[in-house]
Length: 183
Image (tube, rainbow, N blue to C red; front, side, top):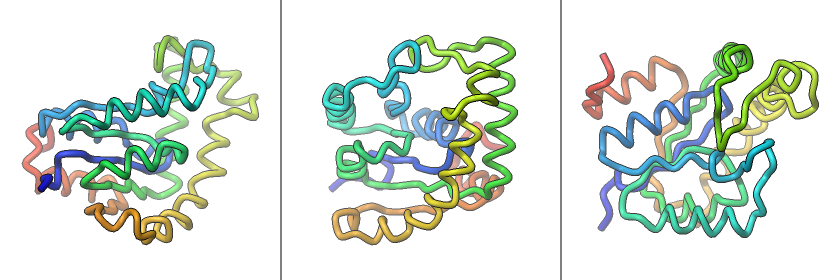
């Protein structure tokens, strides 16, 4: 029987803190961190072909211990199907939007490399239909509405689910786990 913390899937709106929490939990449990965004994008923000991504994700989640972060619905069967625990970072819209705004602004101004050599730009952030800010606006409410229903589907009944609704709840959750990087 698998332990609750062997294979963890973390979902939530952009800016909720999925990657940060995934890194901390991977460190805490000695697990591999799987960042789904990193597997999905090639340089130039080009999406990789889905069959290739699914093959890479299937290989990654075949391991005994991992923490995966991301919301890619076409990968859900692979990630959630193998996960023992799902953590939903259901933070308020204002928190997610503010975090994404400042994170993206900082990355744009510094030219920080993310996901296979990609960079965020001010033009992409503020003047594009592909804007991460527009994505937060469009996806936050939809995810909050649909995810509770989706988690009730029978194929996910094996998941131990934790819904964290604020940065304070995330901190309290980490303290309960004895996270050495918290507090």
